[in-house]
Image (cartoon, rainbow, N blue to C red; front, side, top):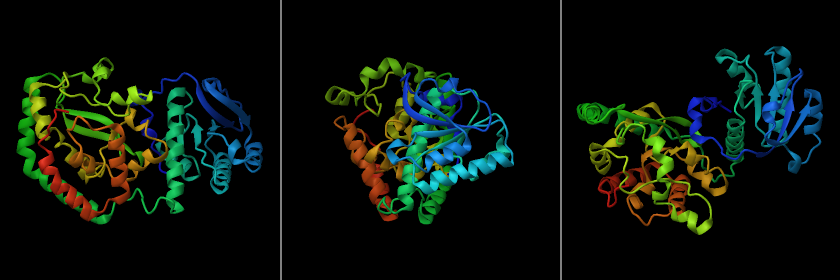
Amino acid sequence: MESINYLVDKDFKEVLVKNPTFKKKLYCVSSEYYETEQLKDFESTEKFTVSSLLRHLESIKFSEAPDAVIFFTNYIDGIFFENLSSLGHVIRTSGYIIPLIIVSDKIDSENKKKVLKHGADDCFPTIFNPEKLNYWIDFLKLFKKLAKEENSEKEDGISFKISTTKRVFDILVSGTLLLLLSPLMLVIALIIKLESKGPVFYISKRAGVGYKVFNFMKFRSMSAGADKELSKLHHLNQYSGNKESNGVNPVFFKIKDDPRITRFGKFLRDTSLDELPQLINVLRGDMSIVGNRPLPLYEAQQLTKDQCALRFMAAAGITGLWQVTKRGKADMSEAERISLDVTYAKENSFMKDMKLLLKTFPALVQEERV
């Protein structure tokens, strides 16, 4: 599986898990002496040598399997790769969904591909935040589960791959629109700079197809530092009604008449011009013209179970089924939005995308300022 370790960096602070104790069972393995002090907040950790873990994995039941195997090493040599290949093979052929994570300071960009090719799912440095590890284990487990189900054709034909026709269409449309709209985009950028301090673009980490994380671009429509005020505005969330009914925090966050929006930003949002920079994301291949909206990481981390995860099996898009059917309506529930996203993931096709695209234009005139 391709590494997505770039998530684990300073930008990861957006999605830190707040629970101080992590209910996970970890197997720690190494051929050398190592400390597991950073894993003390996990519910269970067991130490093994490589040979003893190989024997143990061949004898345990599925219900006894760990949440992850953490391989500590100071040496990236032939013996390490041999041990890694053996562990990766046993885990893969046994049918277990167990992320295999390497902890080492000796892995650089040159040998990381080799480490992943030999069976590791990702790599961490020796000094890491346990919260990040806990969160990333959940992501890797889900990713491996979906990949396994896809390979065994249990997802009814749904896959991460975007069709060639869809990709060619995305490149032609995004490239053409960027050329035609570049003068308008320059004017918008100038007005943003003149109106308020801060960058022209708002860039944030988003989770797209297959939980792939990328830098999502929009024209900045809020005052600088608006993200820092988020915790003060939770009571204004239009999805907060979900918490009252089922006792849990809502997944999505959206405010009607958000006080952080600038005067020009309001105009950009009402006309959807703030989303023009996403054409760059489409051209890069991060997104598609039509698809499910890519989610902020703090929202995506709450949609990693059961049916909800299916919405990440479709391309991330600028517009889609949710936008043309429910966007801008105050009565939209969290369950409805998830249901629309899952429906698109299951039933999307190029012709259906074209129909959604035609319906997008009247949907640009929103009834609510959200």
